[in-house]
Image 1 (cartoon, rainbow, N blue to C red):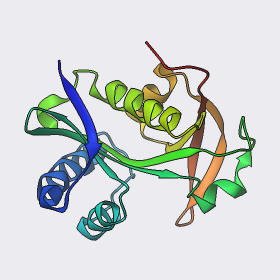
Image 2: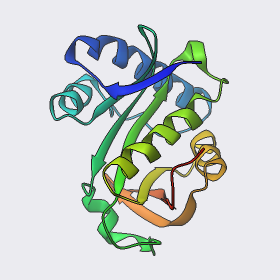
Image 3: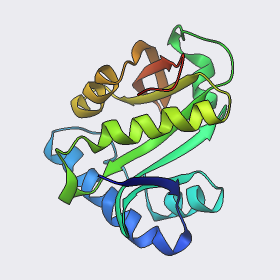
Length: 172
């Protein structure tokens, strides 16, 4: 497969929101409370894109997935109930979503590999992320991709499982 990972454009906002809506519904069907409170929403996606944080995984002209990527920009991570593996610069990502049509093809792993590449291209070897305690799919993706559980962080009053991956070299 010939995948591309690139910054999203505002023209793609509707297609991205469709993918996130599918992911919100999957969380609900999986019995997860994650993303069931009106967040994320179209305004969040628009802000991601306008601020240069929104990225898409594509094949040809089709958007397969979406993620927001930031560098050193997650205040909640300073107050972890636990301990991060590293204390320096880090890449953090949120709102990972894969199109319903492409679930089960390993695209979450593909996207996480692209995020690793993004970090290394910016000279950063720490990648941090979090998920709801009841999002078994994402926790599985973290573990398969070499992330280590570091403790809990809190968003909007709720605990989330926090993970970190330390990169040593480009993956093959």
